[in-house]
Length: 235
Ligand SMILES: [Zn+2]
Image (cartoon, rainbow, N blue to C red; front, side, top):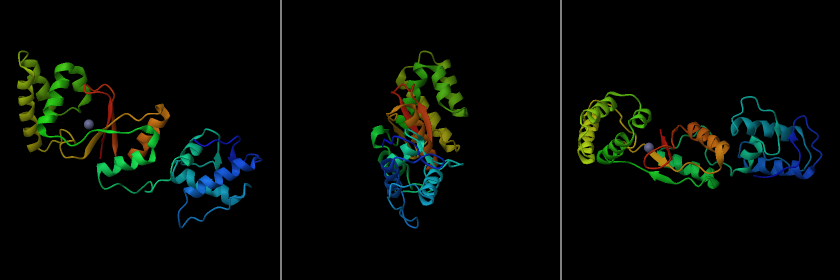
């Protein structure tokens, strides 16, 4: 993140010209036509304050912009990120495009795709393994639905069943549920990806989660997953 020694913008002294100039430069990097470029004078003016407010509304998603950039604050953090190629309302056309966009915007988060589209067989394996390892986790991971109850009940009623028998049964349950219109998993329709949990701590993670949601995605934090901690992202 970029550093400034004092706040810049509305209602503060703005005596450090290097700070003011840096903010003007960063704002310019995030301004595209029809927005006009600021003069990088190092002197605060009404245009610079208006540009801070415009940036806070458009990028930081502040409903009431304060027109001020604080050292270490959310506005400075957002200004320090590379400018986004898509505006906040432009929805990527696919889940892969969405992930690629977020990877590009948060390069330090080390986001990797760890799970893509799945076959019914693979989905059945994952669900069977999860149910066999921990019933409570299975029930809390998957949204309540008839096929989930059916799987859970089947395992309870067949304590001698092997893993492969369970998988075979789950495959049939999934197939039937999908024929009846249930989604079961967005991985089956290739509209979900699993990604590594973003690096950089809680604040960065919530910024990234908000950005994914803004782009039309949904995040399910699966840090207790049997196969290893990850975020499930779908749209
Ligand atoms: Zn997933």
